[in-house]
Amino acid sequence: MIAGLTKMTGVGYIPIKQIGIQGIPGMFSVSARTQYAIRAMSCLAKRPDRSATASEIAASESIPAKYLEGILSRLKSSGLIESERGKNGGYRMAKDPAEIRMLEIVEAIDGRVKPVSCVDAPGACVLGGACHPRNFWIGLKATIDAYLAERTLKDVSEG
Image 1 (cartoon, rainbow, N blue to C red):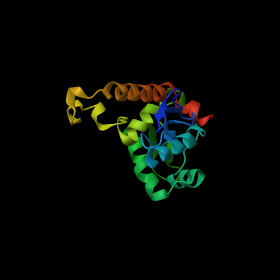
Image 2 (cartoon, one colour; image 1 turned 180 degrees about the horizontal axis):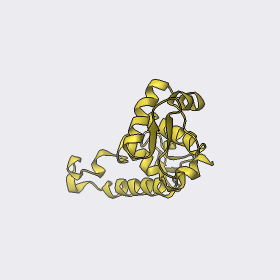
Image 3 (cartoon, rainbow, N blue to C red; image 1 turned 120 degrees about the vertical axis):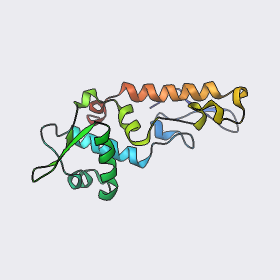
Image 4 (cartoon, one colour; image 1 turned 90 degrees about the horizontal axis):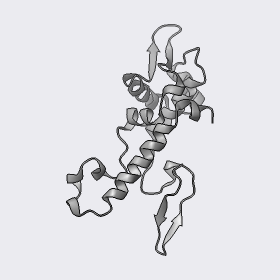
């Protein structure tokens, strides 16, 4: 949840329900890949002493198996999970879930959070330095980053 954000309407400002980052229509949404990655990581976090195969994770979390392979590959490349081949192989946590920030997972899958493209590239805005909402967008990005950095995989997987 990002508390305090409001959405402009034709009549003025109304509070947005505190239903999470995904609840800001048309502004910022979490990709399906990231949602699946968080579910897969939560699944692994709940079984710290044993690994799980991709098909076990897919079945447990209702994630399309083909789609999951690419997600697990990115998580492994980012050092968040490890894999082992063979009869007893599978995926397991590379770090304690209490040490993994949600921001790490989001960035491993989708890169840096950008509510608008010009946040990281001021030259991308056609208004350049005359863009008055720029500080708003920078603040929104900082708020989202802070929210994700404050929460760990352990927090999320334990509900």
